[in-house]
Length: 608
Ligand SMILES: Cc1cc2nc3c(=O)[nH]c(=O)nc-3n(C[C@H](O)[C@H](O)[C@H](O)COP(=O)(O)OP(=O)(O)OC[C@H]3O[C@@H](n4cnc5c(N)ncnc54)[C@H](O)[C@@H]3O)c2cc1C
Image 1 (tube, rainbow, N blue to C red):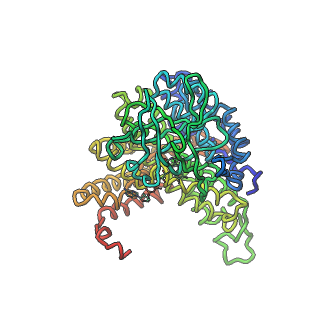
Image 2 (cartoon, protein in one colour; image 1 turned 120 degrees about the horizontal axis):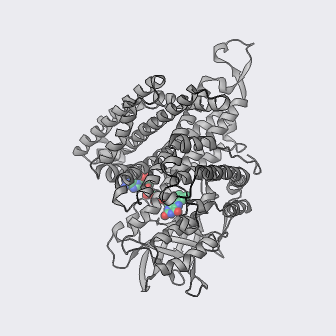
Image 3 (tube, helix red, strand yellow; image 1 turned 90 degrees about the horizontal axis):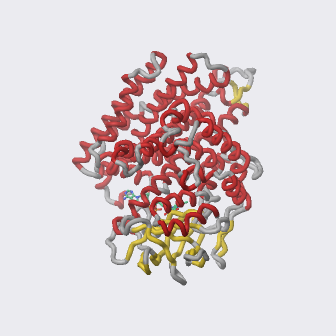
């Protein structure tokens, strides 16, 4: 794809369908509580405007960010972004798009999480590196939540007015998935100020030349604190320290290397050093030794972002594959394959290409539905007073249960299905003339960072399912049961609901089988965890697609016309295809979990 071509394809119609037709956030959340100022009209206008700027500005930076990626100068220890990325970041700030995620008290838009995550898809689809550079605004909201009044007034206005960057700083050479192995140290040096020392690696946005300052959220261990995650505290560490009188000083936050990556090259990944050559100062966020709990709010936000990113990239891959399949002419219709005089057809006429296209369509719509359903639960949590409010506890737990599905399932499946996007192109898909090969490289990281897929599975099964005795899980599956009882979609969808019901029974069977196996050994959770996570995600997605199909069927029955009728027919088709082609796989998963065996764990390492 030439560097001037804009690859972005709008996903707006389906985002609007999810928000305003399926979830009806205009009734369930807009105009209430913290979202009092939000209306359907404002929300729709914002989505249309963001779609436009994604097409015009952000999309144009995707290829330059990959082909002329950021560079590192070891002399100055600075990272320079290519001009196209700087232009995209400027456009982001000029539009004030980072304010969408901010509370009104910080000059934000007062958007519901559902609107925020719906909107997030568009710049992310256009160039997934771009929204990362606006992460400073989210960190400002963390400073607002956890900072003292003095810290807030010293840092917050400048963070927002000057568009500071933001970095999440956990990983170290010896502490990846095992975050609790972190060795970075913290020592109090007066008041709430601490000296931070250590090396961190793979830090997104640790250093770059297009932000006046960068706020690093660093996990470090106060001297004498116990080992493991419980001994970690979280610190706000600006790249440039700000004195009480507002003057800035070097804070000895250094980039000591820039990673050369497979993809997502427009996003900088830095090795960082703190406290080398001088004192790096940071202020403690909240209470000491509360770091992992504080950081979890940030991690959850990031996990949601990664799941949405995967969905966004798959949706782009699908739209490109679809457009290509409608143009590329090759071979005759299968029914006339032996007839040499038969006309050549567009490849979309071939059954196997249709199969591949529908797999991408149904999954990308299903993943979007999963993301935005989860976001709508976050709306309700906020309306009930937020995480800390006991009234919100049940829905907060539901959100917690859904997050590993959003992150774990979307990131794994999008990679698998982007491979089908490429397959639809044949050889052309392997070429840089088209964007698919870059999508694949840019998306592959999603199953790794913010906790690998297996870390998501362990989180799901131990923290989200076992810890409350399966109550939240039963509540979620109970919602599926209720839709079946209500016969949503009527007679037209009876066959689809029957498949959903069989899938639900299989998922219930999978959890029963796993519980039984856990009594034998916890290794079964490790061996089966990823497929159990996928099974739960698939039944939730199947359920959401069936609900969408019921809405679409009603629109068709009401006489929808033209492209709208096609859109709704496509919705019914997605649900039908998913329930017929994906949910039967749950029967196999159930069998595999029931037959889970420990021989793999007994095999000597040398036999691998
Ligand atoms: C491009 C990029 C950007 C990143 N950005 C950031 C950032 O901004 N901030 C930050 O702090 N980090 C960042 N990371 C780090 C990222 O979060 C880690 O790479 C990730 O958590 C995995 O850690 P690891 O690489 O050390 O792999 P490891 O932890 O060594 O994992 C290797 C394999 O072992 C498996 N494994 C590990 N432990 C277990 C276990 N207990 N049970 C079962 N399986 C296990 C994993 O699932 C994986 O398959 C980034 C990484 C990359 C590549």
